[in-house]
Image (tube, rainbow, N blue to C red):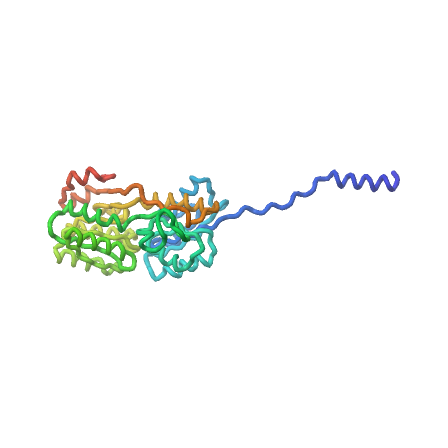
Length: 333
């Protein structure tokens, strides 16, 4: 083969060889922050978190086709019911530059102060407009969207149910934590004044206040008890303690946290927090696909549940009126 033919064959060979494909960029793995006022960070992480609300969010994302580790990971933070931690944990998530943050309840204020740019999906805001997180439910206008829990608005209904169980002029004792339940207490106080019901305010900040609060309630001859959720009450041992002391004090009790029913409590009324967290995934999905929180209407709960524990009622000699049983979504025998 002469020199020119040899060089030509090399050129043809080079043309025949396939060119290496350009490197494809790795698909983005989104980082979803989750800030809980009550939970423990150690129970919130990974693809199978122990914390039920985070698990519900992940279930919603799976239903939409997201795979943990392939499409997203979570950056959870739990304040364990300690409001002094809210600002620090909110700042941590902002510094982590997560793509979106899911949060509910009293931590939302800390997030509002920490960022005006990272999208926030509310997984249960007591009053999104009244608390200044949105201009309106239909058009939030800022970096907050998601779901309302309407917990403040339903406080009056909880009191009405209690008064059906225990009619009369005896006061209703209210256990609450100023750091977490101020708006709910204000709603209860307003409902009581409007209807002429006497409420006994009993603030609880830590476990050492629980027994004293029951002594104050029985000393004032309270006829019933309303207990607002707090990080302290989420802990199973304290929920059991309160349910047991309510039974010992023969106080019909309404709770705003479903876990009290599992601990032996009498009655729970509210929006389903697990469904709210599952639905939050829909908002996360829309935001990750480019939607602006300002344009995503805030959802309100479609249903509020009432659960009654007849075993707890029997233990204090209480007969639940048929009118209340008829509206219950679940009756535990």
